[in-house]
Length: 256
Length: 378
Image (cartoon, rainbow over all chains, first blue to last red; front, side, top):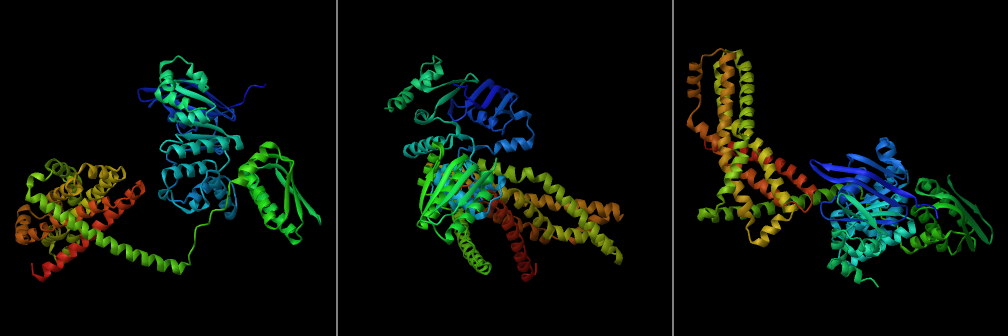
Protein backbone atom coordinates (compact mmCIF):
# COMPACT_ATOMS: atom_id res chain seq x y z
CA UNK A 1 0.00 0.00 0.00
CA UNK A 2 1.29 3.44 -0.93
CA UNK A 3 2.09 5.86 1.87
CA UNK A 4 -0.98 7.92 2.76
CA UNK A 5 -1.13 11.40 1.25
CA UNK A 6 -0.85 14.19 3.80
CA UNK A 7 -3.00 17.27 3.13
CA UNK A 8 -1.73 19.17 6.16
CA UNK A 9 1.89 19.07 7.25
CA UNK A 10 3.06 21.22 10.14
CA UNK A 11 6.77 21.05 10.98
CA UNK A 12 8.70 22.69 13.79
CA UNK A 13 5.96 25.23 14.56
CA UNK A 14 6.84 27.84 17.20
CA UNK A 15 4.19 30.26 18.41
CA UNK A 16 4.75 32.82 21.13
CA UNK A 17 2.63 35.53 22.70
CA UNK A 18 4.89 37.97 24.47
CA UNK A 19 6.98 35.92 26.86
CA UNK A 20 4.70 32.87 26.70
CA UNK A 21 5.62 30.09 24.31
CA UNK A 22 2.49 28.23 23.22
CA UNK A 23 3.94 25.81 20.67
CA UNK A 24 7.58 24.80 20.68
CA UNK A 25 8.61 22.78 17.65
CA UNK A 26 5.16 21.33 17.15
CA UNK A 27 4.52 18.95 14.28
CA UNK A 28 1.26 17.59 12.95
CA UNK A 29 0.45 15.64 9.80
CA UNK A 30 -3.10 14.99 8.70
CA UNK A 31 -3.92 12.36 6.06
CA UNK A 32 -6.42 12.94 3.30
CA UNK A 33 -9.88 11.76 4.24
CA UNK A 34 -9.39 11.29 7.97
CA UNK A 35 -11.05 12.94 10.93
CA UNK A 36 -8.36 14.31 13.21
CA UNK A 37 -9.42 15.54 16.62
CA UNK A 38 -7.28 18.04 18.53
CA UNK A 39 -7.53 17.90 22.33
CA UNK A 40 -5.62 19.57 25.11
CA UNK A 41 -6.04 21.50 28.33
CA UNK A 42 -7.10 25.15 28.43
CA UNK A 43 -4.39 27.43 27.14
CA UNK A 44 -2.44 24.75 25.28
CA UNK A 45 -3.12 26.54 22.00
CA UNK A 46 -5.69 24.37 20.25
CA UNK A 47 -7.47 27.32 18.66
CA UNK A 48 -4.14 28.99 18.00
CA UNK A 49 -2.98 25.90 16.11
CA UNK A 50 -6.06 25.90 13.85
CA UNK A 51 -5.85 29.64 13.32
CA UNK A 52 -2.21 29.24 12.33
CA UNK A 53 -2.95 26.43 9.87
CA UNK A 54 -5.71 28.47 8.25
CA UNK A 55 -3.34 31.44 7.98
CA UNK A 56 -5.22 33.71 10.40
CA UNK A 57 -2.12 33.86 12.59
CA UNK A 58 1.49 33.95 11.47
CA UNK A 59 3.82 31.48 13.18
CA UNK A 60 7.08 32.70 14.68
CA UNK A 61 8.93 29.93 12.90
CA UNK A 62 8.22 26.56 11.33
CA UNK A 63 6.54 25.55 8.12
CA UNK A 64 2.94 24.79 7.29
CA UNK A 65 2.04 22.94 4.11
CA UNK A 66 -1.50 22.68 2.82
CA UNK A 67 -1.96 20.26 -0.09
CA UNK A 68 1.84 20.17 -0.30
CA UNK A 69 2.21 23.93 -0.75
CA UNK A 70 4.14 26.02 1.77
CA UNK A 71 1.81 28.70 3.17
CA UNK A 72 4.64 31.07 4.04
CA UNK A 73 6.10 30.97 0.53
CA UNK A 74 2.84 31.70 -1.28
CA UNK A 75 1.72 35.08 -2.57
CA UNK A 76 -1.59 36.58 -1.43
CA UNK A 77 -3.50 35.38 -4.49
CA UNK A 78 -2.29 31.80 -4.27
CA UNK A 79 -3.04 31.73 -0.55
CA UNK A 80 -6.58 32.97 -1.14
CA UNK A 81 -7.09 30.28 -3.80
CA UNK A 82 -5.89 27.71 -1.30
CA UNK A 83 -8.36 29.06 1.23
CA UNK A 84 -11.22 28.35 -1.16
CA UNK A 85 -10.34 24.67 -0.77
CA UNK A 86 -10.82 24.81 3.01
CA UNK A 87 -13.82 25.60 5.16
CA UNK A 88 -13.97 26.67 8.78
CA UNK A 89 -16.69 26.47 11.39
CA UNK A 90 -16.07 29.02 14.14
CA UNK A 91 -17.14 28.38 17.71
CA UNK A 92 -20.33 30.38 17.62
CA UNK A 93 -20.82 30.18 13.86
CA UNK A 94 -19.38 33.67 13.15
CA UNK A 95 -22.28 34.28 10.77
CA UNK A 96 -22.55 37.76 9.28
CA UNK A 97 -25.24 39.41 11.41
CA UNK A 98 -26.52 41.75 8.72
CA UNK A 99 -27.24 38.93 6.25
CA UNK A 100 -29.82 36.16 6.30
CA UNK A 101 -28.64 32.58 6.70
CA UNK A 102 -29.12 31.92 2.96
CA UNK A 103 -27.14 35.04 2.06
CA UNK A 104 -24.42 33.94 4.49
CA UNK A 105 -24.07 30.67 2.58
CA UNK A 106 -24.08 32.50 -0.74
CA UNK A 107 -21.22 34.84 0.22
CA UNK A 108 -18.39 32.33 -0.46
CA UNK A 109 -20.18 31.13 -3.60
CA UNK A 110 -20.52 34.66 -4.97
CA UNK A 111 -16.93 35.46 -4.03
CA UNK A 112 -15.50 32.62 -6.07
CA UNK A 113 -18.04 31.83 -8.81
CA UNK A 114 -20.41 33.61 -11.15
CA UNK A 115 -23.78 31.95 -10.72
CA UNK A 116 -27.30 33.16 -11.46
CA UNK A 117 -29.36 34.12 -8.35
CA UNK A 118 -31.80 31.23 -8.78
CA UNK A 119 -28.98 28.71 -8.73
CA UNK A 120 -27.44 30.39 -5.67
CA UNK A 121 -30.72 29.99 -3.80
CA UNK A 122 -30.87 26.32 -4.87
CA UNK A 123 -27.34 25.68 -3.60
CA UNK A 124 -28.03 27.50 -0.32
CA UNK A 125 -31.12 25.32 0.14
CA UNK A 126 -29.05 22.23 -0.61
CA UNK A 127 -26.38 23.09 1.95
CA UNK A 128 -29.05 23.81 4.55
CA UNK A 129 -30.65 20.43 3.84
CA UNK A 130 -27.26 18.73 4.17
CA UNK A 131 -26.80 20.14 7.68
CA UNK A 132 -30.38 19.33 8.61
CA UNK A 133 -32.00 22.76 8.41
CA UNK A 134 -35.17 23.50 6.47
CA UNK A 135 -35.12 25.98 3.55
CA UNK A 136 -37.33 28.26 5.70
CA UNK A 137 -34.35 28.81 8.03
CA UNK A 138 -32.57 30.44 5.09
CA UNK A 139 -34.62 33.62 5.26
CA UNK A 140 -33.95 34.16 8.97
CA UNK A 141 -31.21 36.28 10.50
CA UNK A 142 -28.51 34.72 12.72
CA UNK A 143 -29.80 36.60 15.78
CA UNK A 144 -33.13 34.78 15.39
CA UNK A 145 -31.57 31.31 15.58
CA UNK A 146 -30.75 29.12 18.57
CA UNK A 147 -27.13 28.25 19.31
CA UNK A 148 -27.44 24.79 17.75
CA UNK A 149 -29.05 26.16 14.60
CA UNK A 150 -26.32 28.82 14.32
CA UNK A 151 -23.73 26.04 14.45
CA UNK A 152 -25.49 24.15 11.68
CA UNK A 153 -25.82 27.31 9.60
CA UNK A 154 -22.12 28.01 10.16
CA UNK A 155 -21.33 24.50 9.00
CA UNK A 156 -23.50 25.02 5.90
CA UNK A 157 -21.47 28.14 5.08
CA UNK A 158 -18.21 26.26 5.71
CA UNK A 159 -19.40 23.59 3.27
CA UNK A 160 -20.53 26.11 0.62
CA UNK A 161 -17.49 25.67 -1.62
CA UNK A 162 -17.26 21.89 -1.14
CA UNK A 163 -13.95 22.24 0.67
CA UNK A 164 -11.48 19.39 0.84
CA UNK A 165 -10.48 20.24 4.42
CA UNK A 166 -12.96 21.28 7.07
CA UNK A 167 -11.81 22.92 10.31
CA UNK A 168 -14.22 22.74 13.24
CA UNK A 169 -13.70 24.70 16.46
CA UNK A 170 -15.59 22.91 19.23
CA UNK A 171 -18.52 21.84 17.02
CA UNK A 172 -20.53 20.25 19.82
CA UNK A 173 -19.80 22.68 22.68
CA UNK A 174 -23.02 24.12 24.05
CA UNK A 175 -25.25 21.58 22.33
CA UNK A 176 -27.49 19.19 24.25
CA UNK A 177 -26.41 15.52 24.09
CA UNK A 178 -29.03 14.65 21.48
CA UNK A 179 -28.09 17.54 19.21
CA UNK A 180 -24.39 16.79 19.80
CA UNK A 181 -24.89 13.16 18.81
CA UNK A 182 -26.77 14.25 15.69
CA UNK A 183 -23.92 16.64 14.87
CA UNK A 184 -21.38 13.81 15.22
CA UNK A 185 -23.50 11.71 12.90
CA UNK A 186 -23.72 14.58 10.43
CA UNK A 187 -19.94 15.12 10.36
CA UNK A 188 -19.36 11.39 9.92
CA UNK A 189 -21.81 11.06 7.03
CA UNK A 190 -20.58 14.20 5.27
CA UNK A 191 -17.02 13.00 5.65
CA UNK A 192 -17.91 9.62 4.17
CA UNK A 193 -19.95 11.02 1.28
CA UNK A 194 -17.75 13.97 0.33
CA UNK A 195 -14.38 12.47 1.23
CA UNK A 196 -13.64 15.39 3.52
CA UNK A 197 -10.61 15.77 5.69
CA UNK A 198 -11.76 17.10 9.06
CA UNK A 199 -9.66 18.75 11.76
CA UNK A 200 -11.67 19.47 14.87
CA UNK A 201 -11.02 20.87 18.29
CA UNK A 202 -13.21 19.21 20.84
CA UNK A 203 -13.58 18.68 24.56
CA UNK A 204 -16.40 16.25 24.03
CA UNK A 205 -15.19 12.74 24.85
CA UNK A 206 -18.23 11.19 23.18
CA UNK A 207 -17.46 13.03 19.95
CA UNK A 208 -13.89 11.73 20.14
CA UNK A 209 -15.17 8.23 20.62
CA UNK A 210 -17.71 8.33 17.81
CA UNK A 211 -16.06 10.37 15.08
CA UNK A 212 -12.29 10.72 15.37
CA UNK A 213 -10.01 8.46 13.35
CA UNK A 214 -6.95 9.78 15.12
CA UNK A 215 -6.40 12.19 17.98
CA UNK A 216 -3.68 14.81 18.40
CA UNK A 217 -3.11 15.61 22.07
CA UNK A 218 -1.43 18.94 22.75
CA UNK A 219 0.91 18.36 25.69
CA UNK A 220 4.29 19.87 26.50
CA UNK A 221 3.94 22.36 23.60
CA UNK A 222 3.94 19.55 21.02
CA UNK A 223 1.51 16.91 19.79
CA UNK A 224 1.16 13.27 20.63
CA UNK A 225 -0.83 11.58 17.89
CA UNK A 226 -2.55 8.23 17.94
CA UNK A 227 -5.82 6.39 17.83
CA UNK A 228 -7.92 6.30 20.96
CA UNK A 229 -6.66 2.83 21.83
CA UNK A 230 -3.03 3.86 21.36
CA UNK A 231 -3.47 6.96 23.51
CA UNK A 232 -5.13 4.99 26.30
CA UNK A 233 -1.91 2.96 26.48
CA UNK A 234 0.28 6.09 26.55
CA UNK A 235 1.93 6.51 29.97
CA UNK A 236 2.03 10.35 29.89
CA UNK A 237 0.29 11.50 33.11
CA UNK A 238 -1.91 14.17 31.42
CA UNK A 239 -3.02 11.75 28.70
CA UNK A 240 -3.77 9.12 31.32
CA UNK A 241 -5.76 11.61 33.36
CA UNK A 242 -7.69 12.69 30.26
CA UNK A 243 -8.62 9.31 28.82
CA UNK A 244 -8.59 7.17 31.93
CA UNK A 245 -10.23 9.71 34.25
CA UNK A 246 -13.85 9.22 35.35
CA UNK A 247 -15.28 11.02 32.31
CA UNK A 248 -12.95 9.29 29.86
CA UNK A 249 -13.90 5.89 31.26
CA UNK A 250 -17.60 6.75 31.17
CA UNK A 251 -17.38 7.69 27.48
CA UNK A 252 -15.46 4.49 26.74
CA UNK A 253 -17.98 2.41 28.68
CA UNK A 254 -20.81 3.74 26.50
CA UNK A 255 -19.19 2.04 23.54
CA UNK A 256 -20.79 -1.24 22.62
CA UNK B 1 -10.64 19.07 -17.73
CA UNK B 2 -14.10 20.48 -18.31
CA UNK B 3 -17.51 18.97 -17.78
CA UNK B 4 -20.12 18.10 -20.35
CA UNK B 5 -23.59 16.66 -20.86
CA UNK B 6 -24.74 15.00 -24.09
CA UNK B 7 -28.37 14.36 -24.87
CA UNK B 8 -29.57 11.71 -27.31
CA UNK B 9 -33.33 11.99 -27.66
CA UNK B 10 -35.25 9.01 -28.97
CA UNK B 11 -39.00 8.42 -29.38
CA UNK B 12 -39.10 5.80 -26.64
CA UNK B 13 -36.06 6.52 -24.46
CA UNK B 14 -33.71 9.45 -24.08
CA UNK B 15 -30.11 9.18 -22.96
CA UNK B 16 -28.14 11.78 -21.03
CA UNK B 17 -24.42 11.10 -20.95
CA UNK B 18 -22.54 12.97 -18.23
CA UNK B 19 -18.78 13.31 -18.16
CA UNK B 20 -15.84 15.26 -16.82
CA UNK B 21 -15.55 17.17 -13.57
CA UNK B 22 -19.00 18.09 -12.31
CA UNK B 23 -17.77 20.68 -9.87
CA UNK B 24 -18.67 24.15 -8.70
CA UNK B 25 -16.21 25.70 -11.16
CA UNK B 26 -18.25 24.49 -14.17
CA UNK B 27 -21.64 24.84 -12.54
CA UNK B 28 -22.98 27.89 -14.40
CA UNK B 29 -22.46 26.29 -17.83
CA UNK B 30 -23.71 22.84 -16.78
CA UNK B 31 -26.80 24.50 -15.35
CA UNK B 32 -27.51 26.16 -18.73
CA UNK B 33 -26.83 22.99 -20.73
CA UNK B 34 -29.10 20.90 -18.54
CA UNK B 35 -31.91 23.47 -18.70
CA UNK B 36 -31.61 23.48 -22.49
CA UNK B 37 -31.59 19.67 -22.62
CA UNK B 38 -34.66 19.46 -20.40
CA UNK B 39 -36.47 22.03 -22.55
CA UNK B 40 -35.73 19.97 -25.67
CA UNK B 41 -36.90 16.73 -24.04
CA UNK B 42 -40.01 18.51 -22.76
CA UNK B 43 -41.32 19.07 -26.32
CA UNK B 44 -41.94 15.32 -26.86
CA UNK B 45 -41.50 13.68 -23.49
CA UNK B 46 -39.98 10.19 -23.79
CA UNK B 47 -41.29 7.34 -21.62
CA UNK B 48 -37.94 6.48 -20.19
CA UNK B 49 -34.64 8.26 -19.61
CA UNK B 50 -31.23 6.79 -18.94
CA UNK B 51 -28.62 8.88 -17.20
CA UNK B 52 -25.22 7.44 -17.96
CA UNK B 53 -22.64 8.54 -15.42
CA UNK B 54 -19.75 6.20 -16.24
CA UNK B 55 -17.55 8.95 -17.68
CA UNK B 56 -18.09 11.16 -14.64
CA UNK B 57 -14.72 11.94 -13.12
CA UNK B 58 -15.13 14.26 -10.13
CA UNK B 59 -18.40 15.11 -8.48
CA UNK B 60 -19.11 17.56 -5.66
CA UNK B 61 -22.39 18.42 -3.94
CA UNK B 62 -23.13 21.28 -6.32
CA UNK B 63 -22.70 19.05 -9.40
CA UNK B 64 -24.60 16.30 -7.65
CA UNK B 65 -27.43 18.71 -6.98
CA UNK B 66 -27.77 19.43 -10.71
CA UNK B 67 -28.13 15.69 -11.40
CA UNK B 68 -30.63 15.19 -8.57
CA UNK B 69 -32.58 18.23 -9.74
CA UNK B 70 -32.70 16.87 -13.31
CA UNK B 71 -33.90 13.48 -12.11
CA UNK B 72 -36.63 15.17 -10.06
CA UNK B 73 -37.74 17.32 -13.02
CA UNK B 74 -37.93 14.29 -15.32
CA UNK B 75 -39.83 12.26 -12.78
CA UNK B 76 -42.27 15.13 -12.31
CA UNK B 77 -42.92 14.91 -16.08
CA UNK B 78 -43.76 11.19 -15.70
CA UNK B 79 -40.53 9.93 -17.20
CA UNK B 80 -39.04 6.75 -15.70
CA UNK B 81 -35.44 7.61 -14.88
CA UNK B 82 -32.62 5.13 -14.56
CA UNK B 83 -29.15 6.06 -13.36
CA UNK B 84 -26.47 3.75 -14.71
CA UNK B 85 -22.73 3.43 -14.54
CA UNK B 86 -22.12 5.67 -11.52
CA UNK B 87 -19.11 4.85 -9.39
CA UNK B 88 -20.00 3.70 -5.85
CA UNK B 89 -18.71 6.96 -4.32
CA UNK B 90 -20.77 9.05 -6.77
CA UNK B 91 -23.85 6.89 -6.26
CA UNK B 92 -23.55 7.32 -2.49
CA UNK B 93 -23.28 11.08 -2.78
CA UNK B 94 -26.27 11.25 -5.14
CA UNK B 95 -28.27 9.08 -2.76
CA UNK B 96 -27.40 11.40 0.15
CA UNK B 97 -28.47 14.45 -1.83
CA UNK B 98 -31.67 12.71 -2.98
CA UNK B 99 -32.67 11.87 0.58
CA UNK B 100 -31.81 15.30 1.95
CA UNK B 101 -35.14 16.84 0.89
CA UNK B 102 -33.26 19.88 -0.41
CA UNK B 103 -35.37 22.71 -1.74
CA UNK B 104 -34.28 26.15 -2.90
CA UNK B 105 -34.31 28.95 -0.35
CA UNK B 106 -36.86 31.65 -1.02
CA UNK B 107 -35.33 34.85 -2.31
CA UNK B 108 -35.93 37.74 0.09
CA UNK B 109 -39.44 39.17 -0.37
CA UNK B 110 -39.61 42.45 -2.26
CA UNK B 111 -42.58 44.79 -1.83
CA UNK B 112 -43.56 47.52 -4.23
CA UNK B 113 -41.44 50.66 -3.57
CA UNK B 114 -44.50 52.80 -2.80
CA UNK B 115 -45.91 50.17 -0.52
CA UNK B 116 -42.53 49.94 1.16
CA UNK B 117 -42.55 53.70 1.72
CA UNK B 118 -45.98 53.51 3.36
CA UNK B 119 -44.97 50.48 5.42
CA UNK B 120 -41.80 52.14 6.63
CA UNK B 121 -43.57 55.37 7.50
CA UNK B 122 -46.18 53.47 9.47
CA UNK B 123 -43.67 51.25 11.24
CA UNK B 124 -41.50 54.29 12.01
CA UNK B 125 -44.44 56.19 13.52
CA UNK B 126 -45.52 53.28 15.69
CA UNK B 127 -41.92 52.74 16.77
CA UNK B 128 -41.47 56.42 17.67
CA UNK B 129 -44.69 56.45 19.70
CA UNK B 130 -43.70 53.30 21.59
CA UNK B 131 -40.21 54.67 22.15
CA UNK B 132 -41.61 57.92 23.56
CA UNK B 133 -43.88 56.00 25.94
CA UNK B 134 -41.01 53.78 27.04
CA UNK B 135 -38.72 56.77 27.61
CA UNK B 136 -41.40 58.53 29.65
CA UNK B 137 -41.87 55.52 31.88
CA UNK B 138 -38.10 55.22 32.23
CA UNK B 139 -37.82 58.88 33.23
CA UNK B 140 -40.55 58.30 35.81
CA UNK B 141 -38.78 55.28 37.23
CA UNK B 142 -35.51 57.18 37.45
CA UNK B 143 -37.22 60.08 39.25
CA UNK B 144 -38.81 57.73 41.79
CA UNK B 145 -35.56 55.89 42.36
CA UNK B 146 -33.69 59.17 42.81
CA UNK B 147 -36.26 60.55 45.26
CA UNK B 148 -36.20 57.34 47.25
CA UNK B 149 -32.43 57.51 47.45
CA UNK B 150 -32.38 61.20 48.35
CA UNK B 151 -34.71 60.47 51.28
CA UNK B 152 -32.15 57.99 52.53
CA UNK B 153 -28.88 59.64 51.49
CA UNK B 154 -26.87 56.69 52.79
CA UNK B 155 -28.27 54.58 49.94
CA UNK B 156 -26.63 56.87 47.39
CA UNK B 157 -23.58 55.15 46.01
CA UNK B 158 -20.99 57.70 46.92
CA UNK B 159 -17.94 55.92 45.45
CA UNK B 160 -19.68 55.40 42.16
CA UNK B 161 -20.75 59.05 42.02
CA UNK B 162 -17.21 60.25 42.66
CA UNK B 163 -15.90 57.85 40.01
CA UNK B 164 -18.32 59.23 37.45
CA UNK B 165 -17.53 62.82 38.41
CA UNK B 166 -13.92 62.03 37.67
CA UNK B 167 -14.79 60.36 34.35
CA UNK B 168 -17.24 62.96 33.10
CA UNK B 169 -15.91 66.08 34.81
CA UNK B 170 -12.24 66.02 35.78
CA UNK B 171 -11.12 64.11 32.69
CA UNK B 172 -13.06 66.49 30.45
CA UNK B 173 -11.33 69.61 31.78
CA UNK B 174 -8.58 69.88 29.13
CA UNK B 175 -10.84 69.41 26.11
CA UNK B 176 -13.56 71.72 27.41
CA UNK B 177 -11.05 74.42 28.38
CA UNK B 178 -9.30 74.38 25.03
CA UNK B 179 -12.56 74.30 23.07
CA UNK B 180 -14.01 77.25 24.99
CA UNK B 181 -10.77 79.22 24.69
CA UNK B 182 -10.89 78.92 20.90
CA UNK B 183 -14.60 79.70 20.75
CA UNK B 184 -13.83 82.94 22.61
CA UNK B 185 -11.08 83.80 20.11
CA UNK B 186 -13.33 83.06 17.11
CA UNK B 187 -16.21 85.15 18.48
CA UNK B 188 -13.95 88.09 19.28
CA UNK B 189 -12.35 88.04 15.83
CA UNK B 190 -15.69 87.95 14.01
CA UNK B 191 -17.26 90.55 16.32
CA UNK B 192 -14.29 92.92 16.11
CA UNK B 193 -14.34 92.74 12.31
CA UNK B 194 -17.97 93.83 12.10
CA UNK B 195 -17.98 96.33 14.96
CA UNK B 196 -14.87 98.14 13.69
CA UNK B 197 -16.95 99.44 10.78
CA UNK B 198 -18.91 101.54 13.30
CA UNK B 199 -15.90 102.37 15.37
CA UNK B 200 -17.44 100.37 18.20
CA UNK B 201 -14.65 97.84 18.76
CA UNK B 202 -15.04 98.10 22.52
CA UNK B 203 -18.43 96.38 22.21
CA UNK B 204 -16.65 93.20 21.17
CA UNK B 205 -16.39 92.67 24.91
CA UNK B 206 -20.18 92.79 25.25
CA UNK B 207 -20.61 90.48 22.28
CA UNK B 208 -18.28 87.80 23.61
CA UNK B 209 -19.42 88.07 27.23
CA UNK B 210 -23.15 88.04 26.59
CA UNK B 211 -23.16 85.31 23.95
CA UNK B 212 -20.89 82.93 25.83
CA UNK B 213 -22.24 83.45 29.34
CA UNK B 214 -25.83 83.26 28.26
CA UNK B 215 -25.83 80.68 25.44
CA UNK B 216 -22.67 79.34 23.89
CA UNK B 217 -20.72 78.35 26.99
CA UNK B 218 -23.37 76.03 28.35
CA UNK B 219 -24.62 74.85 24.95
CA UNK B 220 -21.23 73.87 23.56
CA UNK B 221 -20.19 72.26 26.84
CA UNK B 222 -23.41 70.25 26.86
CA UNK B 223 -22.87 69.14 23.26
CA UNK B 224 -19.30 68.12 24.05
CA UNK B 225 -20.38 66.23 27.17
CA UNK B 226 -23.19 64.50 25.24
CA UNK B 227 -20.63 63.28 22.71
CA UNK B 228 -18.13 62.34 25.39
CA UNK B 229 -20.10 61.05 28.35
CA UNK B 230 -23.63 60.40 27.06
CA UNK B 231 -22.21 58.01 24.50
CA UNK B 232 -19.98 56.42 27.13
CA UNK B 233 -22.99 55.80 29.40
CA UNK B 234 -24.80 54.04 26.56
CA UNK B 235 -21.79 51.98 25.60
CA UNK B 236 -20.98 50.98 29.20
CA UNK B 237 -24.52 49.96 30.12
CA UNK B 238 -25.08 48.38 26.69
CA UNK B 239 -21.97 46.24 26.96
CA UNK B 240 -23.03 45.11 30.41
CA UNK B 241 -26.39 44.14 28.98
CA UNK B 242 -24.76 42.11 26.19
CA UNK B 243 -22.63 40.31 28.81
CA UNK B 244 -25.79 39.52 30.80
CA UNK B 245 -24.36 41.53 33.70
CA UNK B 246 -27.68 43.34 34.12
CA UNK B 247 -29.47 40.01 34.46
CA UNK B 248 -26.86 38.94 37.01
CA UNK B 249 -27.62 42.10 39.03
CA UNK B 250 -31.32 41.37 38.87
CA UNK B 251 -30.77 37.83 40.15
CA UNK B 252 -28.52 39.04 42.98
CA UNK B 253 -31.21 41.55 43.91
CA UNK B 254 -29.47 44.80 42.98
CA UNK B 255 -31.60 47.69 41.75
CA UNK B 256 -30.27 48.62 38.32
CA UNK B 257 -31.50 52.19 38.66
CA UNK B 258 -29.73 52.69 41.96
CA UNK B 259 -26.54 51.03 40.76
CA UNK B 260 -26.23 52.28 37.20
CA UNK B 261 -28.50 55.22 36.52
CA UNK B 262 -28.70 57.53 39.53
CA UNK B 263 -24.93 57.69 40.20
CA UNK B 264 -24.35 58.74 36.59
CA UNK B 265 -27.20 61.23 36.76
CA UNK B 266 -26.01 62.83 39.99
CA UNK B 267 -22.40 62.87 38.81
CA UNK B 268 -23.25 64.60 35.56
CA UNK B 269 -25.50 67.09 37.37
CA UNK B 270 -22.45 68.04 39.44
CA UNK B 271 -19.82 68.06 36.71
CA UNK B 272 -21.68 69.73 33.84
CA UNK B 273 -22.31 73.02 35.74
CA UNK B 274 -18.67 73.07 36.85
CA UNK B 275 -17.48 72.43 33.30
CA UNK B 276 -19.82 75.16 32.07
CA UNK B 277 -18.30 77.61 34.56
CA UNK B 278 -14.84 76.65 33.30
CA UNK B 279 -15.94 77.04 29.68
CA UNK B 280 -17.37 80.50 30.38
CA UNK B 281 -14.14 81.54 32.02
CA UNK B 282 -11.94 80.23 29.22
CA UNK B 283 -14.07 81.80 26.50
CA UNK B 284 -13.75 85.16 28.26
CA UNK B 285 -9.97 84.67 28.48
CA UNK B 286 -9.76 83.79 24.77
CA UNK B 287 -11.93 86.72 23.75
CA UNK B 288 -10.11 89.03 26.15
CA UNK B 289 -6.71 88.20 24.65
CA UNK B 290 -8.00 89.11 21.20
CA UNK B 291 -9.42 92.38 22.52
CA UNK B 292 -6.18 93.29 24.31
CA UNK B 293 -3.70 92.30 21.61
CA UNK B 294 -5.63 92.78 18.38
CA UNK B 295 -7.73 95.81 19.24
CA UNK B 296 -5.11 97.38 21.50
CA UNK B 297 -7.62 98.10 24.22
CA UNK B 298 -6.06 98.43 27.69
CA UNK B 299 -6.89 95.76 30.23
CA UNK B 300 -8.46 98.21 32.66
CA UNK B 301 -10.86 99.44 30.01
CA UNK B 302 -11.70 95.86 29.07
CA UNK B 303 -12.52 94.96 32.66
CA UNK B 304 -14.67 98.05 33.18
CA UNK B 305 -16.58 97.29 29.96
CA UNK B 306 -17.04 93.68 31.08
CA UNK B 307 -18.37 94.74 34.45
CA UNK B 308 -20.89 97.00 32.78
CA UNK B 309 -21.97 94.38 30.26
CA UNK B 310 -22.41 91.42 32.59
CA UNK B 311 -24.88 91.33 35.45
CA UNK B 312 -25.36 88.43 37.80
CA UNK B 313 -28.71 87.66 36.07
CA UNK B 314 -26.90 87.04 32.77
CA UNK B 315 -24.51 84.61 34.42
CA UNK B 316 -27.36 82.82 36.22
CA UNK B 317 -29.44 82.60 33.03
CA UNK B 318 -26.65 80.58 31.48
CA UNK B 319 -25.68 78.48 34.49
CA UNK B 320 -29.21 77.47 35.38
CA UNK B 321 -29.47 75.47 32.18
CA UNK B 322 -26.45 73.33 32.95
CA UNK B 323 -28.03 70.92 35.47
CA UNK B 324 -31.08 70.59 33.22
CA UNK B 325 -28.93 69.62 30.26
CA UNK B 326 -26.98 67.25 32.50
CA UNK B 327 -30.14 65.42 33.54
CA UNK B 328 -31.25 65.22 29.90
CA UNK B 329 -27.95 63.82 28.66
CA UNK B 330 -27.58 61.31 31.50
CA UNK B 331 -31.17 60.10 31.23
CA UNK B 332 -30.99 59.64 27.48
CA UNK B 333 -27.57 58.00 27.66
CA UNK B 334 -28.65 55.50 30.33
CA UNK B 335 -32.01 54.86 28.63
CA UNK B 336 -30.34 54.04 25.31
CA UNK B 337 -27.89 51.74 27.08
CA UNK B 338 -30.75 49.77 28.62
CA UNK B 339 -32.42 49.46 25.19
CA UNK B 340 -29.49 47.41 23.86
CA UNK B 341 -30.47 43.96 22.59
CA UNK B 342 -28.20 41.02 23.13
CA UNK B 343 -25.67 41.69 20.37
CA UNK B 344 -22.64 43.89 19.83
CA UNK B 345 -24.11 45.52 16.74
CA UNK B 346 -26.95 47.12 18.71
CA UNK B 347 -24.45 48.66 21.16
CA UNK B 348 -22.92 50.60 18.27
CA UNK B 349 -26.27 51.61 16.83
CA UNK B 350 -27.67 52.83 20.14
CA UNK B 351 -24.49 54.69 21.07
CA UNK B 352 -24.76 56.70 17.86
CA UNK B 353 -28.46 57.23 18.48
CA UNK B 354 -27.77 58.31 22.05
CA UNK B 355 -25.44 61.11 20.93
CA UNK B 356 -27.78 62.31 18.19
CA UNK B 357 -30.86 62.30 20.39
CA UNK B 358 -29.21 63.97 23.38
CA UNK B 359 -27.66 66.78 21.31
CA UNK B 360 -31.02 67.32 19.62
CA UNK B 361 -32.79 67.37 22.99
CA UNK B 362 -30.26 69.84 24.41
CA UNK B 363 -30.82 72.26 21.53
CA UNK B 364 -34.63 71.98 21.72
CA UNK B 365 -34.62 72.59 25.48
CA UNK B 366 -32.25 75.51 25.01
CA UNK B 367 -34.77 77.05 22.59
CA UNK B 368 -37.52 76.52 25.18
CA UNK B 369 -35.39 78.29 27.79
CA UNK B 370 -34.95 81.24 25.42
CA UNK B 371 -38.72 81.52 24.96
CA UNK B 372 -39.25 81.23 28.70
CA UNK B 373 -36.69 83.94 29.48
CA UNK B 374 -38.15 86.21 26.78
CA UNK B 375 -41.66 85.77 28.22
CA UNK B 376 -40.52 86.69 31.71
CA UNK B 377 -38.25 89.42 30.38
CA UNK B 378 -35.04 88.10 31.93
